[in-house]
Each structure stands twice: as structure tokens, then as C-alpha cells.
Amino acid sequence: MKLGETLNILLRNGRILDPSSERDFCSDLLILDGRIRELAPRISVGAELLREVQVFDVEGKWIMPGMLDMHVHLREPGEEYKETIATGTRAAAAGGFAAVACMPNTKPVNDSAAVTTYILNRAREEGFCFVYPVGAISRGLQGQDLAEFGELRDAGAVAVTDDGRPVMNSLMMRRALEYARAFDLTVISHAEDLSLADGGVMNEGPVSTLLGLRGIPRAAEEVMVARDLLLAEMTRGKIHIAHVSTAGSVRLIREAKARGVPVTAETAPHYFTLTDDALMTFDAVYKVNPPLRRPEDVRAIQEGLADGTLDAIATDHAPHSILEKDTELDLAANGMIGLESAVPLLLDLVRQDILTPLQAAAKTSLSPARILGLPFGAFRVGSPAHVTVIDPDAKFILDCHTFQSKSRNCPFHGRQVQGQVLMTIVDGRMAFSRMSP
Ligand code: DOR
Image (cartoon, rainbow, N blue to C red; front, side):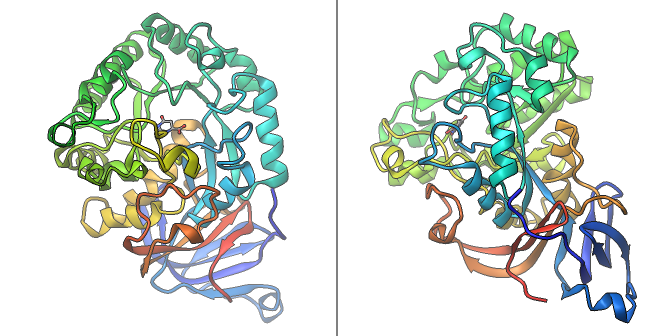
């Protein structure tokens, strides 16, 4: 990675949020040679060592395990004018993320060891955080033939998905779940019935009627969620439902979990924050797939996060250039960037008493790490330090022109927010900091 020296750092008087031990307490954190050395109130460091250690007073600030975003589009290879591994991981680090999992809908599609290896090599050379590639379910995302899951896994893919597109053929989804089981890979479902979606540009409901725009019914998502839950139940293959956007999907997943179906699920900040009222502006920055829904969906998603139905929060960071976005809704591309706006939106949930600070930390570190089988979400003495420090009180205006991402399609631009990333430590090195010792 493109990071500097390993750190000797003492964080003083922070609020440690450790989801792995479910502890929320005030403490110091000492990092030596890039590894977590000690976690205790009032760590005393000898005068000699102190000379080599940078000390930061982080009283009142949150110290969380380095966050992991399990759903990011880095666009490299193939669409480097939208984002690259360098700019995307820089944006991730600025947003508090120590690691991202990147979706396979690149050009070429990541359906082979060659592309997975290319991404990993680029990340090693240019990355500002860890990158975990997700391989395709079907070759070329065409939904015709399965990709070689074993080859993908051996090259470093951590899951499989056709994200951006659904697997429309149910037999293919069944086979994918069975095949993935053999390699202990999770299948990530982009749940969308294309025939029901029918080329819509926004949620089907009163606002689409008012605006005269073609709508996408909630059922377009829910029938596929239901199908994939049934297939996971039948095959015992692990299914993960991506970008959950409707109350009905939350209900289906909740019921399936109660029956013991091996399912996990994520939602994105825009689905617990925005509604389709935003489309009244006709601004394509609000066009995303699945689409923004109604207030009752937003409430159900917040409840699903609170009660554990929705395990993880992932951004679905989907960079697009002005060419794809600054156009009429029908023609505009789907997607919004999310890496650099996630933390204040997450903290909104805490301020609204929907999530505890520990839950907020879990949904952005431990839970996605468990789903993908990655070593994040805990503070372990002796382990390389991945740490995110947040000032929960800092108020500021989100300005996408200051973002590290190459793209500007941020629906939260200009919003007054609270909660700012101060520091992202990745593998014991400083990936982002707005603090001085
Ligand atoms: O809005 C979206 N954009 N949804 C997806 O599923 C894909 C993504 C993209 O790649 O732009």
C-alpha cells in the first residue's frame, strides 16, 4: 500500500468502541511498530520511549476498529475516468475505512483470477487501504455460465456477486449457491426482477405518479429477496442481500433469519436517510438502483438495523462522471458516491437513538468482516493496528469538492452534518489524518 512508516502512537483518553468484546469504555490506546500494544486507562510510557511516540489527546472522540465497507465500486480496470483504485481507496481512508470490498462490474468484469490479481496488485502499489475483490457469479455478468469460483477464491476473491445486475435465472442462482458452498464463499445478491423493474427510473408510488416518471415497484426487489432466501434455505449456501431498500425485504429477511436460513444483509446510508421525494428536483444525483423509497421504508430499514435483521452498513459507493449524471433521468446512470459521507450519516442514527455507538461500530466493522471472513472489527493486542478515530461532535457542511473521490455524484453535498473522521490507521500506518500530535 501507498502508506508511510509504521506508527508509534499513543491515543489518550478516547472512547473505545470494541464490538468484538461489546465494550464501550474510556481508555488510552498504544500502537508500537504499527501493532496494538496496549489498551488501558492511563498507559504510562517511559521517558525514552515517549520520545519516539506521537501522542494525541482524543478525549471525547471515538476510537473504533478500522471500518470495512463491503460494497464499493472502484471502477478500475476500465472506467478510470470515474474512479481508480488509488482515488477510491484514498476516498475510503478519508471516510474512515481501513478496507473495502470491490464489486466485479469493472471492464473487463472480474470473473477470473487474472482480473482479481490485477486489482490486488494495483491495490498493493497504489492503495490507501486494504482492497478485497469480489468475483462475478456469471462470466461477464451475462447470467449464462458460472464463473470459476475456485479460481477466483484462490486468487483472492472474498465473495461472489453479479452486483449491478440480478441473476435472473433461478436455476443459475441455485447452482451458484451450491457451488459457492464448496469454496465457503458467500453469494451476494443484487435482488431485482428486471421484468418487474421494467426500465423504471425511480420508486413506484405517489411521487412517480405525480412526476409522470416510470416507477420500479418494491416487489421488483422483494420477489428476488424471497427467491434467494428460499434457495439459500434449500441449498444451505450462504446468501447476503445487498443494498436492502424496502420494508418488505426487511420483513422477509427477518422471518428467514428466525427460521435459521443462512442469510445476512446490508443497507446503505442513502436508504436510511433519503426518500424518493428527492426526485422532485429531477436531479439524477438521486437516481440509484435500487431506488430511494418512501418514509415507511426508511423507518423499516432503521428498525431492521436496530434489531439486527440488517447486519451491515455498506456505502455502495458508485462513482459516475458528469457525463453519466448531468443528464435527464431516463438516460442517467444509477448510483451515488458514499465513502466520504458515511460517517456523519451513521452518527445520525446514533443521535436519533436508533443505534448505540457500539452497534454503529459493529455494522461498519465486525459484521461485514464476519460476513466476508476478514480480520477486522476487533482490537487485539499484538495485531496490526486498523483504527478509525471519529469526532462525534464536529459539525460541518459536506462539500463534495473537497472529496478524494474522482467523482462528484454525492446526494448529500451541501448538507449540514455532525460527526467527522479524524484519523484512519491502516495496517499500523497513517492512511488519513486531520490531527496533529
Ligand atoms: O446504483 C447502482 N449503481 N446500483 C448498482 O447496483 C450498481 C451501481 C453501479 O455500478 O454504478
